[in-house]
Image (tube, rainbow, N blue to C red; front, side):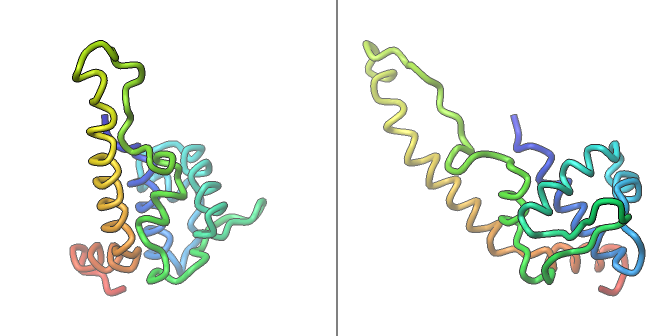
Amino acid sequence: MSISSRFSVGIHILSLIEFNKEGISTSDFLASSVNTNPAVIRKLMGMLKKAGLVEVHPGIAGAKLAKKMSEITLLDVYKAVNVVQDNELFGMHENPNADCPVGRHIQNTIEPIFSAAQLAMEKVLGNVTLEDVVKDIGKKSNIVC
């Protein structure tokens, strides 16, 4: 099982909006790049708007970034698209057998490890901005950003 693709699609959407800032970034346009249905894009755009990352207006085609690229971290995107609930990246199985020594102690043993791993991942995501992503795409595509 992996983290929901909403995360990577959210980064894709925001990056494409920046690359297309002189054009009109409609859900159809964004969906063509993501290779998905425009309804999926509209749902994610609603999440990104609620988080204050994009500006969209009903009845008006197009979207814009609501903040500077340098102010949007991948952690912002991760949280915006509800990839996982806070502190629940790693699911814990419920009701292990308390009569078994492993079952009795497994959750208390691995829970702090899971928490530390999630915090480490979130720290990495918090240190990478949309600007970093867009610049890297620009280099790979020979596009000046």
